[in-house]
Length: 248
Image (cartoon, rainbow, N blue to C red; front, side, top):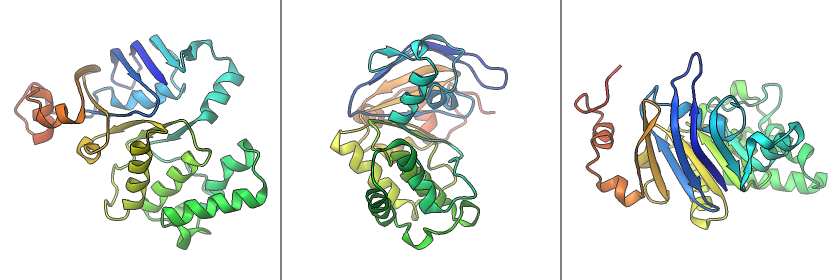
């Protein structure tokens, strides 16, 4: 589904990424984690085709993103669901309107079908009570769930989730977490997650990948992640100042 081949990126105000390679197959869930300035913040923008000045190759369904012209890149971004770190909701639209937006512009559904689908998502994510409220008046958990609903509205084959739980109340986002868990377990959607809290995904993620200073320092299954003696992972899990990682 998605492949990074020796991808490196160096930006002026971002940490570098150095020779990162992985293959996310159809239906798999990958969790990327690491400390700040590890290169973690680059994974989703690169995968979404937002950052383009990189070395190496990024492929989607065996097609290089470099080969995409403007229209092909636009169509690619319609195929994937991207929940950005700061959510990116449109402030002059209500919750309901934000969720319906991709369906109105990028689907062939009728008005009634769009209304029905949005209603289903509002109910499943416990957003019915705030359907007519604009983002500025929402709780942070409601903003997350609205952005997530918008990202999955077109039933994408791949979802990119960029630090979705950062600063969230874990009680109020349970419907989001349950929806994500179902998608991962059903294996109908490829999911790429970047997070500071990898343990949240231990029961269903297929692979955990840790970055530090732009390099992959650990890669393994959930069982391997849970049991590893890798010094980087151990230090990270223990939030310790003792280990190979420098504390900023």
